[in-house]
Amino acid sequence: MRGPLPAPVRCAVAHDSAIFAARSMMRPFASQLGFEREVVEELVLVVSELTSNILKYGISIVAEDETRPFDLAGSLRDGYDAHGKLDPALVYGRGGIGAGLGAVARLSDAVELVPHGAGKRILVRRFLGRPRRGSSPGF
Image (tube, rainbow, N blue to C red; front, side, top):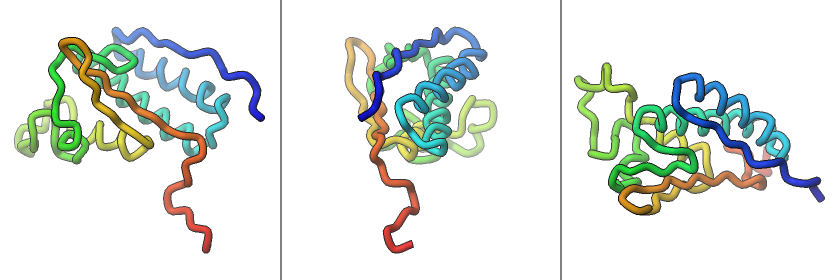
């Protein structure tokens, strides 16, 4: 049986330095929960992407924002955003290549879009007992 859970962490996101702060908080937090080192680094990428999105799109942590809900399934595909397929000629200078939420989904066990007031919440889950990618009992 594991010891007591670590205290929740919070990170105010108002400047680019918050990306580093959130990443720095995630490592010990995820480690204390019992995740393996590789998974800890995957979760660091997830929190980094979500923090970056907060700075770009006005999401507050617990990942909710005031923009209208969008097609999550479409947005999880690389090269797409909330409005559909990205024009490759317009990607430069856009602030992203349309791969962020897809990366979040690949490194997580569940991603859910929940309407919230006039905006939405994006809920991301990662479970401790998840098999490692590429693991096989035969190898």
